[in-house]
Length: 211
Image 1: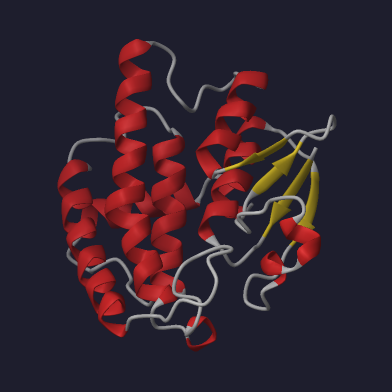
Image 2 (image 1 turned 180 degrees about the vertical axis):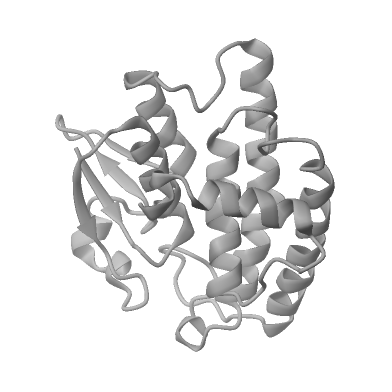
């Protein structure tokens, strides 16, 4: 397998952490998003959408979209389960994972992509052509991240992990979202969100967080 990756982006990191939790390794090919290497014909011939991560299997099958890649890894390497083990846990983890994406990761992406000078004409990710960034979306993204932290702090009151008592893909998405928000988007965890601070310290100590 080959994983087309970018170390500065949160979505590829989600796959790296997921694979590290599973003990799965593969060839890693770095694609520089800032320089626009994901828009070069050499990469677009692999994934015309120009998005990372992209997984290419040994038989040439191409899988894009973070969760789809994680689903493939889960099916081929079921232990430890990170997407649930029964109907209820699978549904709950899927819901929480989507909450982390829609309420957190999209907000962080808006805050960064619409404020980073290098993306001034790349307001949409991937092979979308020239699209102007919108500064107001950056501010909205930052405000949405603050609401996300507040909501997550409430949800983590009395809960070890994002989707209950078991580490899952929802925690991976939240970790990568928060690290990206605190760094690239400059929206760190507020000091008063002690439950998020506690959870973040614990999941950051996992070996997979270094992926």
